[in-house]
Amino acid sequence: MSIDLKTVKHISKLARISIDDEKANKLKGDLNNIFELIEKLNELNTDNVQALTSIAETTLRFRKDEIKSENIRENILKNSPEENKDFFVVPKVVE
Amino acid sequence: MSDITSQSLFELTSNIKEKKLSSEEITKAFIDRAEKSKKLNVYVTDNFEKAIDQSKKFDSNPNFDLKLPGIPIAVKDLFCTNGVRTTAGSKILNNFVPTYESTVTQNLWSQGAILLGKLNCDEFAMGSSNETSFFGNVQNPVGENLVPGGSSGGSSAAVAANLTPVTIGTDTGGSIRQPASFTGTVGLKPTYGSCSRYGIVAFASSLDQAGPMTKNVRDCSMLLEVISSFDQKDSTSIDYKRNCYSKELSKDIKGKKIGIPKEYRVDNMPDKIEQLWKNGISYAKDCGAEIIDISLPHTNYALPTYYIVAPAEASSNLARYDGVKYGFRSPGQNLIEMYEKTRSEGFGDEVKRRIMIGTYVLSSGYYDAYYLKAQKVRQLIKKDFDDAFSKVDAILTPSTPSSAFKIGEKTNDPVSMYLNDIFTVPINLAGLPGISIPAGKDKNNYPLGLQVIGKPFDEQNILNISYALEDKINFKNDISDWWLSE
Image 1 (cartoon, chains in turn yellow, blue):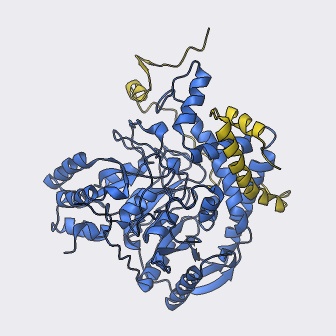
Image 2: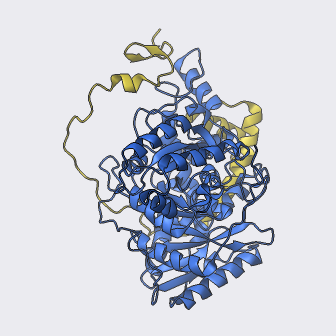
């Protein structure tokens, strides 16, 4: 199979990365080369293989629901691209 | 006493404890050398002023019981450091100053180490040559215009060039071991779950591990001992009894069974690599180890599996970079436009490629064909190792299929770049520990490495085998300081 330009543009939409036609064409070539490598997996029959879902082979731990950090609002907002008191600011979303 | 910056971590800690050197002397020596080594481009952000203050503070009230007493250390710029800019080699985090500390770096500071600065790396650790960094490529001290490997390229170059006594990197598909091999240094990727991932900029969460990068195996054992810890803040951190790796380090590997996998003999592999591998095998025999031929039949499928699993996880992990809460933002007319412009301008080409691959393999209608298929093959790869480890204690392979290449040589061909990692990727997929040690040099005098792979949590064993081999190999890097300026 091969990935066409329409698919590249669809994926870029899903990934929220805008690309122009020139970049899309370049990406199309790169992705097709990479998928040529990936398609090698089709040589293998994996019908009776169970997918590996966790490499660590442990069950997730439970922990007590405790508050450990307090008054970190300022820290959380510290790297915000646009400041406005206690909130993150984004372009208007409701007309 | 030899020049301060060329000393090993073991020598420096001994000299500090015996009061032959102060932390300030050591810290200043590394800073002086860094000032003359800008051509290598290893630093993204330095912490020199604060480091000198901290070294003076240590000297005024020294605690010699610590494992890294007053030792200055630079770290890969993928570890969040409280109050010190952390970029992950990306424009999108160019202005990011964490308000918290990664567990692994906290472990360093808790044992007395001092932050020298943050080291260059491939953007979000995606690359094998350090050429995808927003902050430019790094020069390999081994030779001019040679890549230092990647993604921990600034780290490997800094250790090889004596700009930090030791460092820590991260390894998702070979990002510690491949650059170690390219620079004639030692790099260890611990078992998945050994070192906390808390505060490390995430790339592929089921594969990422932090690990030590050092001049020799003993230093490697000393540093692993400090950074490996159980951490509640990482849900995949594993609670097990960790060794005192440096205390239990031993060259006695008599009777150890070492497997040699035939699948690691690949087409077009330089004869020199084959020869160094054979040398390694005969050294292991000389040390009393038993050599056993083994097979890891799914080795060839590791790279394609990796290029589904890693980008899939990356596309999810990197969804957080949207210009809203932190990092770079490009303004847009509406929210969606802001997201798209921010991510388009903030990410470099390789990162975008991998996000696109990941988005595609996880998208509706393709999940079973790609992601699920890859998770099944990953199971087969892991089973290969499980089977092998029922017969052997460790596995010996080359670290990389080639030595360091020229800057720019592979940047236009992603697949040829990916092939650098064929010997290292399977180990991440199986969650195993692996170490690369210098094995010798090729015809150009560029270093080549050997990889020792162990059972889960058996870091002590691969350290010991490496320690024994290191002694026999007796590698000398002989780097001329060609890059130094006045």
